[in-house]
Amino acid sequence: MGLLNIRLTADESMTENLVNRLGALDGVERAEEIQDLMPHMDDPDSTSSGLRGDMGPGHHAIIVETCDDDALPRVRAVARAVAAENGLAVEFEDNAEWGARG
Image (tube, rainbow, N blue to C red):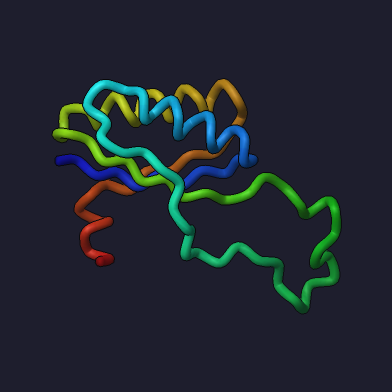
């Protein structure tokens, strides 16, 4: 079984779109958004804290489980393509790194 953690900077609809596209791929058993444990907040002492210009798309964490490691390159390729098509930022974390967390 393959496991991939994806961090995405996007709005809710684009995140849902990506999760649905990944979940439809052959070899993918599960694709879902999970709670992101990384804090993404303004510095409370910042003079620009909370200003509209600082607001942007949200940060999302997606987990993808595959039947085997052979499906992981397809998952990465689709996530990269969706990100490139829509101007999103995407980051991948392999199962070896993920497994060390818990």
